[in-house]
Length: 343
Image 1 (cartoon, rainbow, N blue to C red):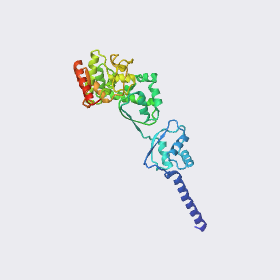
Image 2: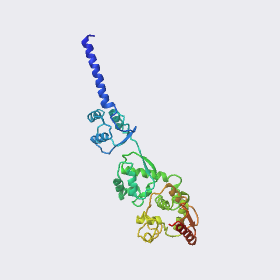
Image 3: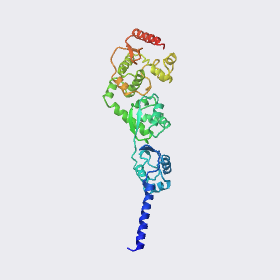
Image 4: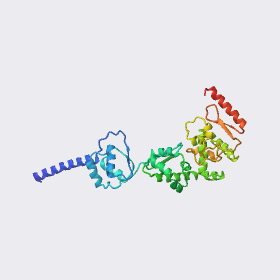
């Protein structure tokens, strides 16, 4: 091998090293980042363009060199119209190649949607919008679409009964309609368990009516151990052709959610949710009902009580009575204890 050949090979080797260093720097090395976390989450909206995705990644500090990133994205067939949407778990230490491959595969990181004690559909929409892509306005518009709700077997008044409090796993980019359709499946699965449908039928109630009933029990007490007894009280009233006279329905009817006690204003308020003026159940739930309240209605206690009032001991429990005379005695004791406490 002559001297010229050796020099040529040496130069080529140096160039190869330099080229490798450049390629590593542009495509494999981690971008400079201030992220302390070992992973972050990138959200790519539905119908996003490639330019939008680049801006999102730049904002997260994940793109080292925009020109090189765009070139590599083209070579790896990542750029498309529209881009693959979703929420992705990303390691900020990845280079451009690893980042593009991960986003291209589209393996999303799911979110957990938590539903528990929302009172109004607007609150449900706001809560759900914290976890998935559709915003609260999109969700509430769908919640008020009478024609669409009818296809699901619901109305605006009964839609709340669709939501069984629980934690549900979704992909972030689920559509509003797909979210509701999934809720229908979860609702039906819930009612298929533990003989719930059979128990509701035996009571002469639909699942929606049981849920409405349970929402009243939910607002009457926070103590699960007495929910079936309270449900029994309301059943006794309904069977005896009494109005339910449930104070929480008056609060819902007037939307006076800060009220500390029910007054004549509430009792005389003209609304189908006023169970002092109207017999039977109101048109729909007055809040989200917990599973404990739903099962309490389905397993309501069989007793002779028609009345109940809060106990004055601060336990959150109630004193029950079979007659108005007994109830008035309980109420007097309650007021006397409040007066002793200066309330």
